[in-house]
Length: 187
Image 1 (cartoon, rainbow, N blue to C red):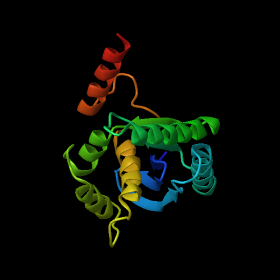
Image 2: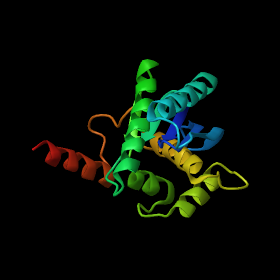
Image 3: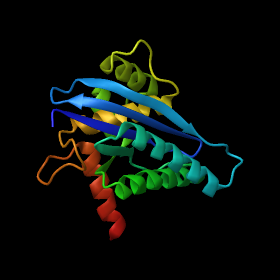
């Protein structure tokens, strides 16, 4: 396949960023779609998740990606925020599974390193690089939209193109740290 179409999803209950890019074998990328699915914090969680699912389904139907990349939920201090993010992430992964699409998750550090070359880059640096890579006049707003595009680009550039990195493919430092943390949690 000369080009891979990746749907990146930056999960969240209030703002769920979605971005679709076409990435060629030479790593050049073209913006296909970017947006944010918003829900009202006053709604019941099941209604918010249903709205997010509906918005993601619309993007899947309209743009027909080859693969879905979702931000991997990692430790955050605010439990209610991490729960909502994890729930939205689960919805995104479930919808990919229902459609038979490969899906992968990437940590924020991994995405920042792929896009800026620096795993501790701030949001403005990521937004600026996303705009530069996609040859946009301005950085996508809000940051959730830029983060979704960064996820899609990161996934395409990881070399696998589809699904998770293949067996034997070297892991990034972020992936190694995640794997090690998961192993420690199982003990």
